[in-house]
Image (tube, rainbow, N blue to C red; front, side):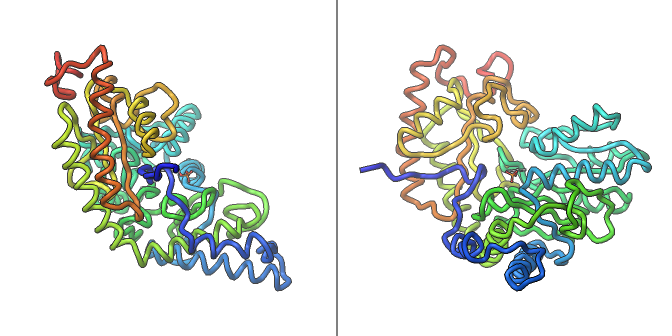
Length: 400
Ligand SMILES: *Cc1c(COP(=O)(O)O)cnc(C)c1O
């Protein structure tokens, strides 16, 4: 019999909820109309889109007309960065972001630098925390955009976005938040955060892949990113992805109901997993803030071990895990997030991310705690660089 799959990579993507699939099915079959068409087959589709929009708005405490559907988190981030840079170029050319953003924010910033914009990449502390003061001090008269993620996808650190939002608002600077890791998992309130735009993605909270949304505050100046037809108030062209949007709406509706209970359960299991790993395996380092942390994120570096090897051996035991982020695994570059937190290349390579979800049980956690120590011992026995008792990133001369 096949081994049970223990899926511990919810930061990369989540399984679609069966109720989401059920909601989508009619729109993949009979209800195939174009949501912009006037006959009833089109109109029912349009109504379904608008109902989904209302669910997403409610989840974020936003107004319905402030939600625009996109193809996912990456498009939403790209739209915000390029759209603000373009709309506000007469006001200035300076952007502030952080060193630990997702590539969907960093790459547009790099591209804008080549086009003559100036970008400040604010550093983080050893826990991956951005300092509000550093952001405030980076502001110049030319600053038009501040982009800070709500929680980091690799190490789970939750950033002080409310405080940063307050400063941005005082200064009249557009504040964008990549909330792809938090929406549907912890409360996200666009008014409490004081953001002008916020990115989210359905497949990160039990919805379908390839659909996301962006919140854009009423009155905020953001140029359109995809132009063509007049959909989404001429701000985002393209025939409505009705099945995806309906699925996202259902996922948002479910998240609002279940989020608090899920966080309670995952926090408890996360803490068991962290405590168990610390108790059973020597020479390790917890990555990310121990307190200001996503309820489902566990990230450790193991001295003398390669992340890729851990993933492959865990996979042989039916456990899905990740090292760094899914987007960077497969490449040999160490994680830009771990490097920004001051980890050495070597320690960055030895990192393992386990991200829990709503269906993870205590038995699953126990299985990982029974399996992982043996895997680490096996890899360390073969390692040319590991010698026991060195700790992990213990400073110059140590394993780092
Ligand atoms: C997954 C992720 C994205 C990209 O979202 P997609 O919908 O996969 O394009 C952006 N930012 C963060 C923080 C993410 O975790």
